[in-house]
Amino acid sequence: MRPTPALSPSLADAAPPGAQRSGPSPLPAPPLGRASRSLALGVLFALSLAIFGWPGVELARDLADPALGAPGIPRRALQLERDLTPRFADWAEARVASGAAAHAPLHDVPTTEWPMFSAVFYLMGTRALTEAAARGEIDANSLGSPAERARAIDAARALLLDPSHHSWVRRHWGEDYLHDENVFFRSLLIGGLTADVAMTNDAHAREVLRDQTDTLAVDLDRAPLGLLNDYPGECYPIDVLAAVGLIRRADEVLGTDHRAFADRAIRAFEGRNADHLGLPRFRVDLPSGREVQPSRGIGTSWSLLFAPELWPERAPRWYATYEAHFFRDHGWAAGFREYEEGTEPEWTFEIDAGPVIDGFGTAASAFGIAAARRNGRFDHAYTLSSELAAASWALPDGRLALPRMTSHAIDAPYLGEAALLYFLTVEPAPGVEVVRGGRAPASVWLAFLVYFGPPIALGLALAQSVRAGRRARRAPT
Image (tube, rainbow, N blue to C red):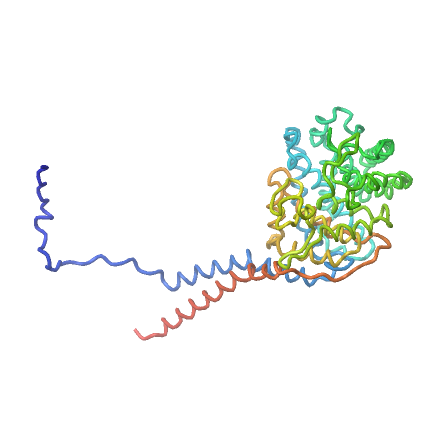
């Protein structure tokens, strides 16, 4: 048996059970003073107004904007241009100077395609606003600084023409990458440089633009099916359709005429070259033309942005089919599906489509704003734009938190905001019937609770704390 340890003097001298100790007892920590509590609540309340209350006010202003559901330029587009322009210029200049694009992983879409798309969207949106101001449809003073805008336009053009930003397609196609298939990349050059030349008439940009429109039109016209690959072994007809539309838009600034080519180009998207719904297919194999993927939300929303100006008789039928098979209203949300019902998971993620939520394609619905506006369907445009406004989380410094979060933080931080700048400036194609209406789904009204709930709760707590402090000061001592 272990020996019992000797008692320490403190224990040996301890009072017997039941005896009371003398001396002070330890006291609990004092509670937070009322003034300190009110100060802390005041700071939290102020922060909540900036982080939650401001987006709620901005959402209310967006929903009340008549241009969200009718032809015209919404105030959100004007604010985006003012806030985005200097940040975009800084980013584009720094990215070109760094040469980082030369080291982008070959198959990493966010680091290869997204910076180019950012520049294209910024230029196209800025052109739309510049021309709207020139026509007197908006006040030129509502736009940002002309000097900052000129700097951002120059930076966007420099990024599009920067050899390091061409590295990935050069590795795919070799040194002749600007004249060997490569439809997607060449169409981006055409789209961005068309907007740039319309605003600046830069001589080098005009030369590259003329070369690309002429050579790509000839290449597509000579192709047996009217289709060429985006990447080796990857043909996306929806990108070919967009390329045709962008070539025709380039005609407006170059003074060229590719109407005959565009009239023949429809062969790539009808008859046996359409999917089972009669829509342009998403992906096919060449040279056979075998379908790999039928129409999808992101591809159809993108291609329908150009269809009304190319084939005004065909475009309404395509849009009606797209609406019938892809547009859904689930009460809590409404928008375009990424996949036809029953063909793919309802909850998934794909790099081009983004998150698919309850069947809705986030990218399909975002691009769908532009497609709906171009086709005159402002009932759809309002619904989709209201959801976008609710989810954007507009901050006091002009940033849109969610579009920023869904962009690539390093290589393309402004893709989401640049895309929205363009989507919200799209106007109906000439001659289309304008349909108004639409509604804000339940998720939009829930957003008001999210935005205003914390400030209201903290405001009430602050008021209660202040009242308690006043009562304590008035109480007799």
